Length: 124
Image (tube, rainbow, N blue to C red; front, side, top):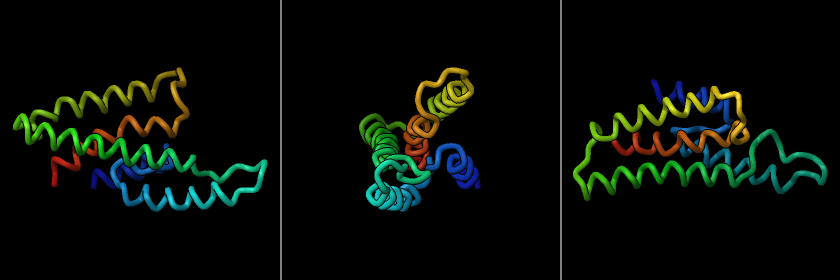
């Protein structure tokens, strides 16, 4: 239930899914087609650049890989990652509420994807 809620919020805020890479791959395909068929002088669509979706999937997989490496080499489990995940999400929310624009809004979801990659690896 929570992942669905998070994905709904991410889709509204960032036009991407932080926890569902299948949705990002489908949206990537749509963004690629829109990017290449756009007429000169018009925007590709309401979707971000296709590179955004590639980086999002890579960011998610970085979180999955980090969990698996530390699980195998150090014997870490979910309890070792829980404080890190909570702190990361709190810092993300604080940066999200900041009056300063660090990046275009939809690019900030790249900060969340590794955390949800960690979570996904923990639950599988």
